[in-house]
Image (tube, rainbow, N blue to C red; front, side, top):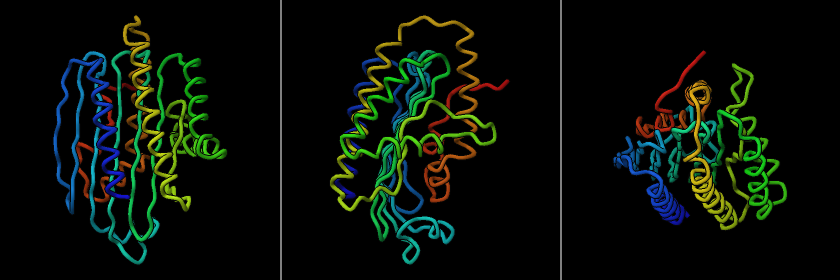
Length: 265
């Protein structure tokens, strides 16, 4: 399953970058990197007029968990060795009418095997109609695989992407799941692939719809403040950031999700 997952993540990465080239004529900078223990990845940074900053990162790594991590990672308590493969995507559009969009999925192998991941969007200005449509489509996707997935993973997302120190959500949510091991790994993989395809289509749909709409400076100010919240969450609470730092990942790839500009009141 590690190879199948790796191949799928690489294919999804190529498809999404091809789509983004339809919108953006700016820079697409590819940087390969090596993991401190074993394996590595390929990071693509995007800088342009439609996508102010974006990142698409794939990696396949391995190694041994620290004693501290062994205690909290399923299947690692008696054996610290692990292998992992995944894809992570963050889009920070220049237009404040388009939300920041985040997606990641991963497969991790210890003495146990499981998938994790999810997606969420972070608007800075009025996005109520689109938010409702986003969740309706996401529910339809989840219901295809299990009648409880949407409510379970939406709740997990709402709880996870929450800034406790400010008592406010990061955005309008989405889904978040981890340690997905239903007992049928092919079914779990099918769900993960559908989540990736959904996100690919969603990026294309939203960029197409809003990239040419006019905005004002007041919209930009709200966007920068919302991005500040994004920075706070990623540095204080994000599990992926912590995992990458604690396992010797590439710093630039780990912090790829940071917006290019942010503001605070």
